[in-house]
Length: 132
Image 1 (spheres, rainbow, N blue to C red):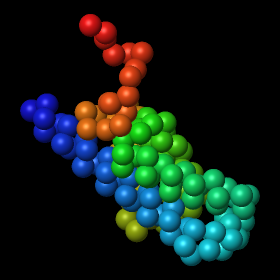
Image 2: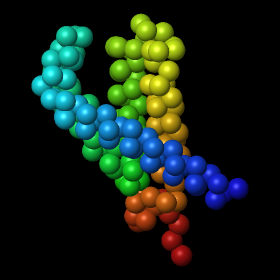
Image 3: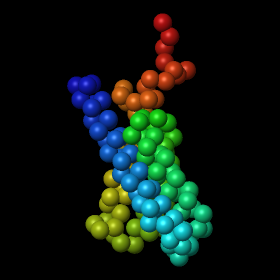
Image 4: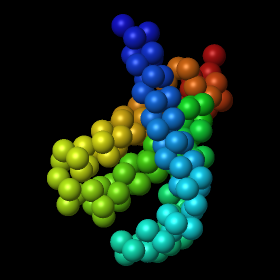
């Protein structure tokens, strides 16, 4: 049973990482200046487009590897919360913020539980691991 939990966590972590990486990559590929302009059009500072795109791109890659999983996932929760409140909430649940909510819930799982056994985090020495 524990093995199934680890496999499930690995699948969720990699898919979440790929999803955020792709969204960050798209922001840069489509012209980050355009994204910055869109952020300004909805009342956010333009530089936040760069911040969000970097969190998504670098954080997505880190999550795929399982590096800094709790911190990266906490940043993803913040990004999704902001996207939901600022952009998607007015659209309602279906066709609005349902995907953002699902991504936020998955990220919150990793904030609470960490990256799992098959990750860079698990291979790193930690102060919380018992020593023999």
